[in-house]
Image (cartoon, rainbow, N blue to C red):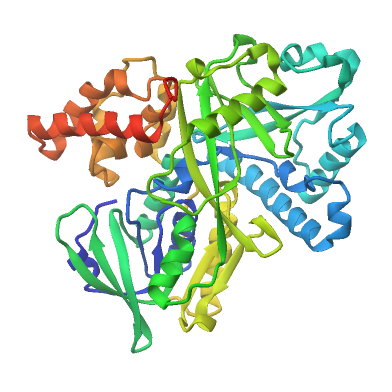
Length: 516
């Protein structure tokens, strides 16, 4: 997946330009390329750098979509929301089955438990009904291995000894869910397949302007690495898949300032929990009615997310001390025996989920929408809102369907491939790194040569699993930098600067808040 110059990109006219190289932009590019569209996809930063890499990493079954909110009567009073919930749950179940079957190197199963309390929002029969509905909505013969433990069998669930007020427990629901091992690798593999089918792919490329002329869009592209490159790229149709930046990009390109999305900030904290909880996750309800996850991860657990409307600097989203304290308070309420404190936090992360705007709810709706911006004076421009990480293939197909209703493909279709790349398979075969253990130099060279690695941060956070380890790759960072420097021609000063930048980036973007 070679990174072309902007001059080379500007020589052609494309059927579709996808702006945004997160998971939904990548999914759209893959599907469009397979259908015979000439596609160019760009991102102003690295691929998967935004909302995709900051998610909760769950390829979940969709149970949370069926939670009505503060009252079980909300769906009865608002049937339209119930239909949206069922549609989203169906997509989640379909996605979980397909992705877990075709991308096993990049997903892993684990068991989740959900405690049911006398004073909780849901009764055992309601939880049973939710899983029966999931089974009806999902693919045939696909199960979640659902079991509801009663008071007599609670000891079979490791979390039971840590939960609050055991005397109030009516039972614990246990089911199978999945995690994405690496959201960044999933994006890269999807883009590499689009590239194989003819798509043009480039990171660190910002679309700063768009004008319609001669039946095509003329997109002003600039290189954001300070290399001075700029070019006008022509495309018949544009997809705004910039996630949290969606509204601001639409306003910049078209002058239309209408709100179509809401950004919800979510934070997570990474900690080490007792060994008996390894490979087990917890889903609980917070005191303000939100869903809180405690999920296993490489010998750690991460806990979150929050869901707070956010409209500040999207390029510098970090967990605040106040948000960290809220998460600590909620997990300690759910499991008081843990007694977690700030000193237990290994690192944190924060991201902004782009959900669809809803005038009746400040936190928006989970509905996935494709907005035709012709009414905003921008014919041939589409904007995506919603679209969680787990449904990216379905969303990619829906975006391609929307394109096909407006534009015919210009080249022969190709057969796409959902399998993980050879590099992802090799990374998976390595298993969990130990602190200080380097990724083999030959594999690092393959990654740098074929996956548009522009700096050390790209490599550690979005191409390998290093940034997700408990040490975030720091124990092996110098050895890793030496391999990269040899391939990219960095002198010693540049190599040391890259290491320093990676350390600074981690400290700022993934703070532990132990001393705050």
